Image (cartoon, rainbow, N blue to C red; front, side):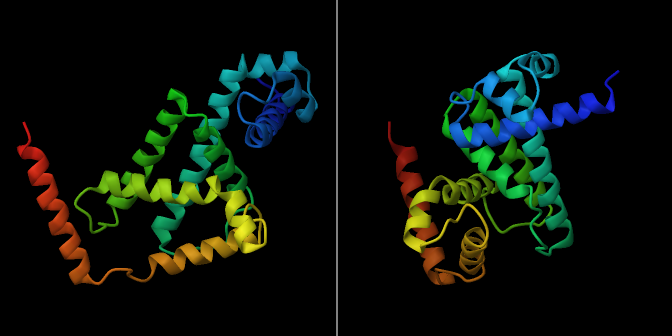
Length: 204
C-alpha cells in the first residue's frame, strides 16, 4: 500500500512530466530531467510509472479526466464560470501530445471526441453528424493552441497565459454567438454539398 508521501511524489512526478512534455515534446523530455524537476530519483519515477511510456499514459489519463470534469460541469450548469488555473496547462499539454502524430495521440483525440459526443448529445445540438461536429470543433479549438506563436505575434501578447488566453476565448465566444451565414446561405451550401455527395456516389 502506498504511503501519503508516495502519493505526493507520484503527483509531483506527473506534474513535472506534464510541464516538460509540454515544453519539450515527448521525445525531448528525459526520465532524468523529469525526475530532477520533481525532486525525486529516476528509480522512484520508474517505481511509480515503470517507463516514460507509462508516465505519459498516466499524464494523458489525468489531463483527459480533469478536462472532462470541467466540461461536464459546464454542460450541466450551462454557465461558463471561472476557468480553473490548472486547466490551461493541461490543455496545452494535450495539444503538444497530439502534435507528435503517433497512434497513441490519435487514440487520445478519439477519446476526447467520444467524451464531447457524449456531452453534446444531451444538449441536442442541431447537426446531422454529431461526431463530425464534435471532432471539427475540437480541432478548431486545438488550432488556437497550435498557433500560439502566430496568434501571440499578431495580437501583441502571449495567448498561452492570461490575459492573452482570455482574449482569444472572448473572440471565440463572439464567433460562436453570432451566425456568419444566413439561414438561406447555410441551406444553399448544404444543398450544394448534398449534390456533390450524390455525384461522388455515382462514380464507378
